[in-house]
Length: 278
Image 1: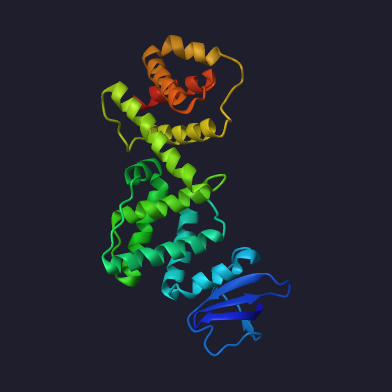
Image 2 (image 1 turned 180 degrees about the horizontal axis):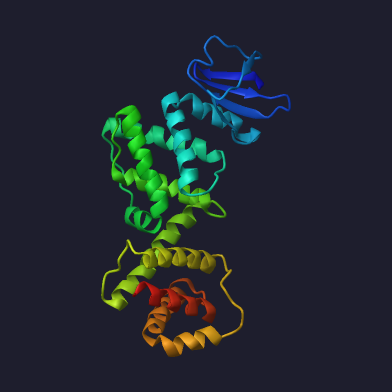
């Protein structure tokens, strides 16, 4: 398909538009060399095509793209493609710009010997394991292509961007808050059970997934509430020890955030606590 060049960012990155005035970014070695605004260019499978952010933000987008080496732009696209496979999800094109800028800054910091500590590294690594795996893949790709070894903490930073992109409202503050609350809840479980949990077990992974969705429902005021206490009463009789732990979580959350848990949510907490103990 032929596109009209709107701006040549550099010899490998070109801003174009189609006949409907939809804007795209074309990447490819040398595709912008000798090209001028208004000329036609052919988009092929050899070029990576991206839909830029909304027109109101195009100026900011282009200014940022001008400062990012094409190698980093290409790696960013490959990482997003890999992430979509690993996370079974598709991402807004804005994530491309955010990640490219992040990689560029992270690599620049490494070259200057500047280290920034990630205060939620442990939480991100343990409670967003799939996103963290994507982060590790990204670190490997950067080292393989650019010869720059980013620290493991950087995998958590990358994972954070993907976790944030997958959140319903894309609020980065919520992603951090959720990770901390998940950690606090897990600490209550571990302390109450007086033993460590097998983080590689299927029950643990399901447990973490349940807790993540539970925390999201808690803060979005969309807790399970059928008005039927049958399951709650059943769990109270059959799993009294697990019920006590769930009630500790309830008391902690109500005291800290002033929000009440429904009996249905408490009952499902008991179910998952019992499973993770197996």
